[in-house]
Amino acid sequence: MTSTLQRFFKHGLWDTHALLIARVLMGGMFLLAGIQKLQAIDGVAGYIASVGLPAPLLLAWLAAIFEVLAGASLILGMYFREAAILVALFTFIVAFLFHGPNAWQIDQFQQMLFIKDMAIFSGLLFMAAHGAGRTWTLKL
Image (cartoon, rainbow, N blue to C red; front, side, top):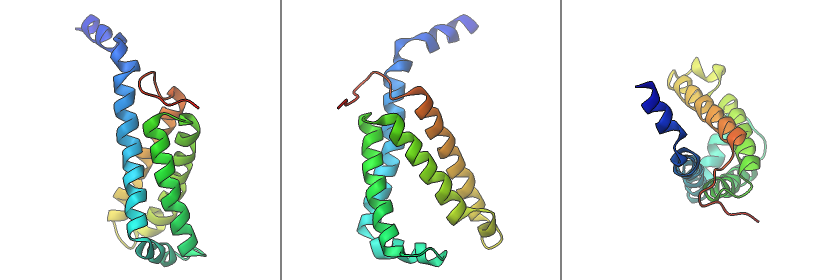
């Protein structure tokens, strides 16, 4: 059984197609989140204001544009490691600002969102460490 698994994981698909699928899924999540923010920018600004951050409308626009551009970068494999690190930092900060321990006292659902964000953060760090792979990457 072990030799079968070893052959499976050494197959070239892991360096190509699996990384492409991961890029598309992770990047697509951020791309779609950014597009949704752009479609409801006032609601996003209201949510940002609810946690007491300054200039909520500006921050909403910056977050939406960042998520669209970073998500596209992850999907395309362009500036991949830089985008993965920046999105990881963004996710880490957002997790603590909006779903951190203070929010758990109000709504236990926030704890689950925080844990989800930490899993995404971890996945992005892993992606940054291993790169975009060799399949369908756009290089400038």
